[in-house]
Image (cartoon, rainbow, N blue to C red; front, top):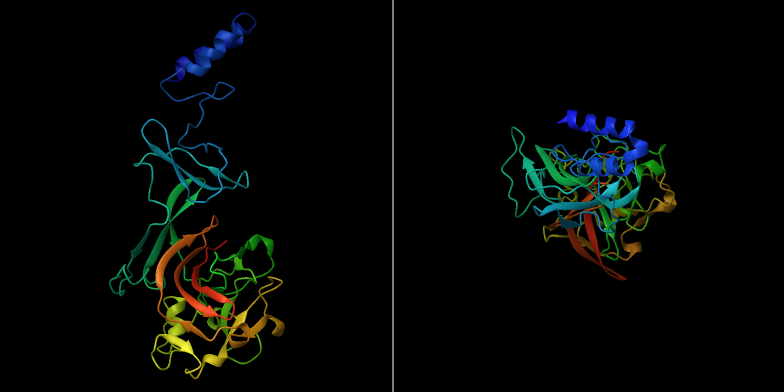
Length: 315
């Protein structure tokens, strides 16, 4: 199909002064192999080129095209803006945004989808994310600490690129990612100073998949780590549990990923008298791939908030 295109383009070049308008129409309407760009070369077509229409809600889907294809809203890196991507048919979509799947490891037990989002540290979890307007299966790593949202709004994250020199080992593993997005002080980490040195030194002092449990394994999520503080087994960690007073919040005001004494406050001083260890699954992702997965409501002196286990994307 390239020969008719080349012939048409050469004809335009030779007869430009006489038939420019006609050649333009030829370039625009020549069929069979897809549209041509302004220079007469084959374009990538709708399957690869984002539509460029502005949008405001990451993951939003709209119907487009004659065959009821779908376009998705996502961050377009080249434009640094939220735009709708290409129109994709059902066959062109690898997955639907928000879907997840779990591939068990060799010794991993079966996954009950009603109760668990999978074990991020035994086998592999995949979440359907969007990049450039195209859904794909993204592997989820073992970076799942608990944060507190006091007004139950989405977790506020600071882009890793905003603090390029700041690193923090969240998962405490040989292949750890030390450059992830970071929660703002509005949605602080739940932490415990295990060695009593006055600072939070790694993911082992957060509540997530970097936590080492009593049996020596890593916690499969933040709520599993918190459950070890529930000594009386009543599904709440509160003043009746001996280690409740050890729980603190880390509000990293300068986002340098280095804790200081003024950034650490006890739960009680923050108006929180108990935290639940039971949770529900409600996947909510931002445009950078960070996803709140397990979550539970908690009460505090100012109202009702949400305790969220956040799956962080490596950057």
